[in-house]
Image (tube, helix red, strand yellow):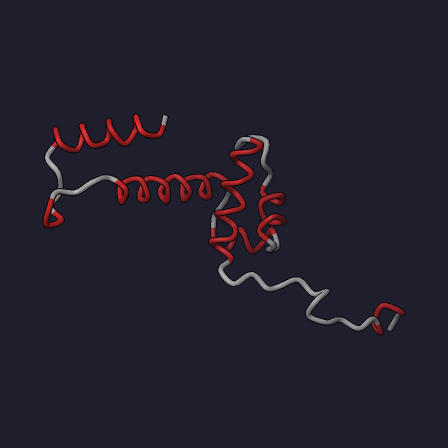
Amino acid sequence: MNEYSFIPTDATTAPAPVVDKRAAIMTSALSLFAERGYANTPVPMVAELAGVATGSLYRYFSGKEALVNALYQQGKLAMAAALPVAPGGQPLGRTQLRDGFGRWWSGLW
């Protein structure tokens, strides 16, 4: 035992456990990739911001490339969900989809 063994801990000093580690890792990675770029963001930095150990990150993703691919897939699904659909939930035709995407893309700028 040492003097640190007797330091009381309470809920105000202990970090809150990360509930959804995969989501925390993805959110942190997206933030860091946007701020620093992919090449300038080391995996330990992503893990630190997410509040998980570096080894935990590798339980969810085989590496940084797998992580960025998961972010891409998530973004692609979100964009697809935001595109309009025809009445009744039917997929739009090619021309309608292209026009809808054009309006959506123009609206971003």
